[in-house]
Length: 196
Image (cartoon, rainbow, N blue to C red):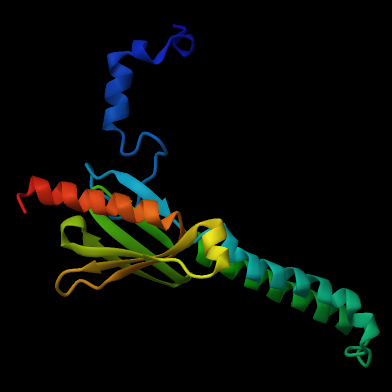
């Protein structure tokens, strides 16, 4: 009755089974092509720092109409047309910010216990998906360049695969060395299970 007061060792068998049968007991995450027994290890996006340039640009563009009275660009238009031009300006900025945010949010890299998936979101009407089984991975390399990437610990991971499967590149992901290490461990574990 008062389970929340009991230590973890007293979790009932039913709760343990429920936790084991869930797809991902930590986050409850699923993706389109996920198989029933497949577990998500990493769900990665570009590091949040990569959003700073377009956010800075958006702030400048938002503030631009405030300096418009000092530059007589629209003064030849009647007041209502000037207002419409400013509204149109803010609608374009909103579209720019929304497109950039959606691009960042939906470009994801998923590492599961069986495969690696790269979802590239280009716009609302088009996305590209590449995937490779863990056993097809030949090499994983990390590239970090520049002061920003070293300070904030993000970089690119290049995953080379065998055969006709395209190479995958995780761009500007946080903690790339740790992710590459886990991918190496998964590859070695699966290779050892298959007797390779």
